[in-house]
Image (tube, rainbow, N blue to C red; front, top):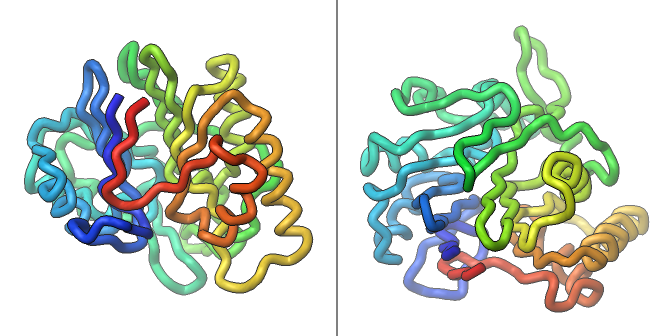
Length: 268
């Protein structure tokens, strides 16, 4: 399995543009697929710089209904009109960070190849999606600043619109966008549905914070790192995890934690 990081918040390669967003191009035995499309057209330009022909992609997965994961989807549609797009129905709602709209461009809902889901979906023997993560262990505190509009009222976003991708080959890979429901809760749901744990996890952990962590927040990050370190799994992270959280987790997790950068290529 070959995975190219098309968009990430950080970059070490001057060939690529980067911004706040997340996108992967994943080549499996059966598929050429995109997991999230970043915030805009820069993601598509990065694919071209990497020599990736997006017209060959057959599947697009949108992890949740935020602009930094779905913002490049319309630009992708200009390159490819046949790939099946999978997104949870709830991702079509209006989402906000405080007063700022961070939801999807509503024109996405007019895409003819869009599949709106209500829960889990097995695409084929290789690809499956799961949603409905209800655990609240170490639920990211930063979620409290995120809201949704329902029936004209602003309410707390409970992230029913978040879905995770599972790729099953010789090794199994779990891919999430931001793990808004909490990476441990996502892994608990994976264990419930699939048994055991995947060989690799690619996900942001949504631990980013502009100010210093409180003692309690730091303890949560450290405790999360200890639990992840105890699993027979490698974790690739970046985007919304934040450099400060990565620096806290790395001494605990050592080689089990790999930081992502725009343009990186992962082989699993």
